[in-house]
Length: 167
Image 1: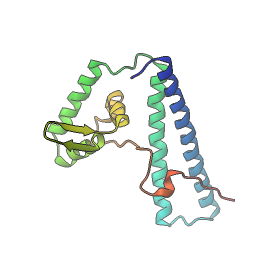
Image 2: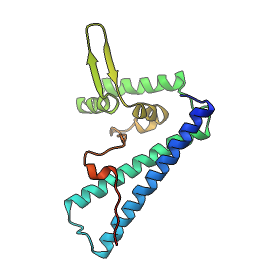
Image 3: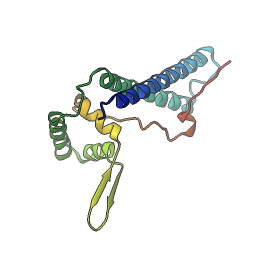
Image 4: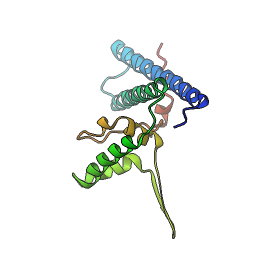
């Protein structure tokens, strides 16, 4: 990772953006809860339940990203070292070559977005955020559940820019 002044400044800007977005999601949830408390929205509405669940999940993932980025900004020696890579590789070997096939597929989907083949090469692409997060926080991979990493969008268009205003 780039540890120059410009690189660190970019991390600080991204951290500020994530904190702002996290606050917006927390405020949106607060407004939803207030509306529920006032009885202006139907608590039994399945779309409302889904919206709350997705917003909470997104807020929580933002919190994890903020924690990771804060550690990177405050500590210059958080480089990806050969030791970290080896520990990550060992853990991934355990996950991919042991256990049930459903979990193995879920781990592949966590890191790999696309596999392209041609006559001379295989190109695998995926989320840098998910990979970086996994290398810096391997303890989150060492569970019975496959973690998820927010890709900064939701399938439901209205969830992408959740701005709720209640009078």
